[in-house]
Image 1 (cartoon, rainbow, N blue to C red):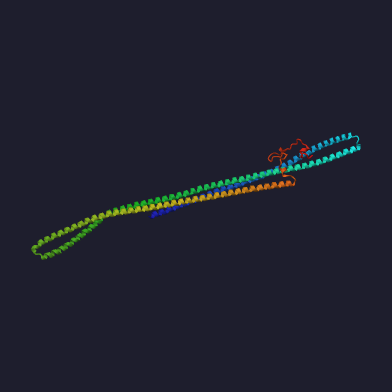
Image 2: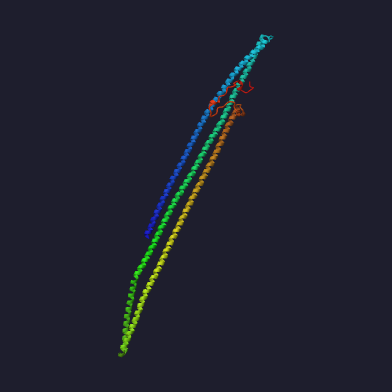
Length: 469
């Protein structure tokens, strides 16, 4: 029993040590798993930051490039319109000189045909017409210059307004690209978090299964050992009982012989006592009996003595026989009862051990089921918190996106309104600014050389509104 108890204690210590070792290993594996997941997530966030920085740098370079293109296109447009207007003024001057010469010759012919008018009067009239024509031409030239100035200012305002709208559209596209990139990154981050959750859940379930399996194996091993020891104990008790009964059977003849000797000794002592009593009785009878009858009386007394001793001997022999028979019966009955009681006690102990083991297994199974449910609840709660966090982040992102788009739209609207108000203050109407320009603007992405203004039909009427001359 002491050896078995020591074995149980040693087994429990070994089981506890194995269990602690497995739990420590699971803890280390979980820490390494979490560290790897955190590192992977931090790397993803670092890549997100780097991608956003690249996108911001690209957008900034694009803005600077577009600003340079706009400045170059504005200068080129101003230069082309100025060159075209200079050509128009040259053509106008040439036509004006031709018309002045033709009018001068016509006026001379008309005055020379009027001979009734004095020459001095004709010269004054001719000079007066020349002065009027020069004055008219000066007024027309001034009006043409004013119209050209208004035209170039209007075209430049149209160009700036168009480029502002294009810049707004480009900024809107950049903002959409940035928001789309952030949304994509948010989706990738959420997908990784869900993937990490699934991996962590699988590891937790796998570790719990290994711990439960080890506990179950230890309990089965302990129960098997207990049953094996109990069966060994039962076999040992049965063997000891068999040996005890065998010893009792071997010791039975010696005990009976001792009792038989005691009975025979008692019989001899009784016989001696009877003989002494017979002698005293014989002496008393002979004293009262005549001599001639003493012989017959002695013979009768001897016969009576022999008969009584024989009867006493038979009684003692019967007592010895009864003693042998009774002792054998009592021994067989007690051994059967002892065997039956021992068997019942051993079966009861086995049933108690089996019931205890079944109870222990049931409690262990209930504990494992409870731990599984607790782990499932923890995983479910963690999944719910993660989904709530992702929903909150997505909602916050949508709000920020809507706010940034609204602010960008308000900014562009204010800038365009300020530009239009400035144009109105300069004397340009909003309708005139949104009219299609007669100038061919360069495409913002195209070559500036593709915006050459055609000089065909270059005359004064193409540089200012009709009817202004």
